[in-house]
Image (cartoon, rainbow, N blue to C red; front, side):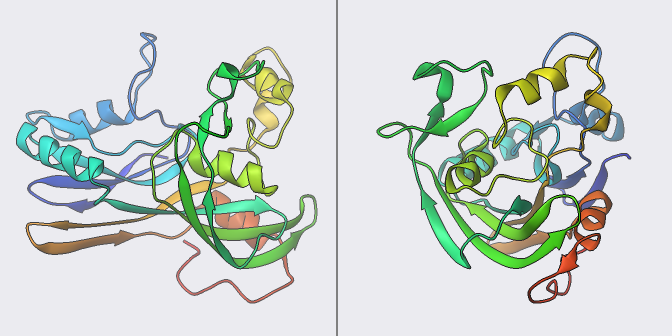
Length: 248
């Protein structure tokens, strides 16, 4: 599955990134990334990723066209004027809504962890806030009770939504780092293990972007991608039906 341009403006692009794509190179191994794909589409332009997504996270991200616009969007990002919301499938049944106001830091700085990037709630560290609404809950034949939540991060910490929902006791479905023993992730990245091809990606999707540009509101919203929609549809409803427009 390839990326898609969802909205094209003279000053920016909004792109739908499929799960499995790196947004930019992380090592010199020749992996074709989202920024490579964009430069193929717009070969004569300066393009800058305003927002980023983890490799397994799908959905919308913002790309600036031109250095001046990149600078303006960077300042907007710092002022938290670019609003993002995510859809996630999580284990269990969270409260109907709430604000997770818990500081995050890299776990390995405070206690032993085999996963360098793993974040955790650590008192007195970096402030992090995530608003959420639970949209519906169902029972999946293999996973048990799962819920569809809309999560809106008010800060931009690494793995914020995933770490916050683990802290609440409702980890993201198929997350290999959060809500799992370290060995699950270590086996996954070991390409010799038999587990690797059997594990689905984590159930997190960037569904909405909103900001003001040149005094005009910009809103872009997309539903669940096919793999997450199939996971949800494969569950038996135990609460209200899925809200209209959520499923892709």
